[in-house]
Amino acid sequence: MTYAKNAPFRADVVGSYLRPAELKAARADFEAGRIDADALKAVEDKAIVDLVAKQKAAGLHVITDGEFRRAYWHLDFMWNLQGVKRGTAPIQFKGSDGTAVVEAAGVDGEISGEHHPFVEHYRFVKALEDDNTRAKQTVPSPAQTLFVLQQGIAEDATNPYKDNDALAEAIANAYIQVAHDLYEAGCRTLQFDDCTWGAFVSEDFKDTVFGVDAKTVQRQYAAVNNAVIAAVPDDMVVTTHICRGNYQSQWFSAGGYGQVADVLFGEENVAAYYLEFDDDRSGDFEPLAKVSDGKQVVLGLITSKKPELEDPETIKARIAEAAQYVPLERLCLSTQCGFASTEEGNHLTEDQQWAKIALVRSIAEEVWPSSAEPDLKPASNN
Image (cartoon, rainbow, N blue to C red; front, top):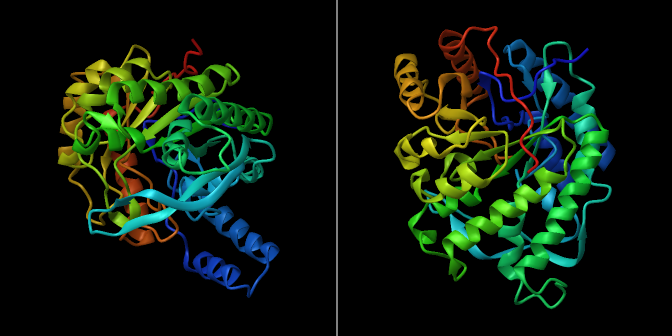
């Protein structure tokens, strides 16, 4: 038997974990041609089995593969869609210490989602479930893929999509294929990781996004996510994680949720939001009043960027403050993001990583009775 409930859980995580040294070395050896794909997979498999055992030992109800088979939280998924190629971003985003992310993705044919390797990746984790845990699959949101691919749409002669509507429809259809394949593999919890909303809260995108009215773009991005949610089976829960960047402990934007709350919280049909709230860059909790009825909110109050442990009393007070806008029974607690959005990882040790997760769990057990996991229904497909 596997655990009966779906994410989110009172004590939760976003999904990525620090890569162990053996895995980092194997990936470097593979890139250098010193080992083949089978040898790399053997190291990945062992590392994931070990990681899942640690997640279970930490008392988590949710297990993931830590994104151990990826270099990036988002690009590996995009590169493995049919019709998508590796590329360089025409618009480069610089992190808080000045480091730019230059790799991106582009379109080089008709986009589709057949035979995506993430389906087999999920099957491997699914087989490690037990009667206390549920495996979830994290992917970049359809909106995130649209955000990346649309940047070069006008300049790329090989791109068959000459407007954003056509591109968005193709992306949605590809995701629907992947989601159904994941469902057939046993997946019932699918998480859309989405930094687009984290970018839209910044001053850079306050009024326009790529020259288009910001609210118009917000609604298009919610619509492409909703198109996929509407097409998944009724018993698949779709959640989303929103943050402002997490590249080697850096961040890429700042701003509260107010300027995206109407669309993100009121119109996107996810079942739950995992929201970054670990420092002042995320603003206050007031925009949570826009979260439409029935949705869960997972408060990312414990930072994954820094090793220092937060004060439990401060976190409990912040949960109480958030409960002024969303009822406590619809709230959960997590880290603000994963620990390794890219394979390099954030600036803390594995021991410090697990101490953060232990803190999340201990606070959650105080705030909510252990028997009171949220009774979450899948998101509305309307």
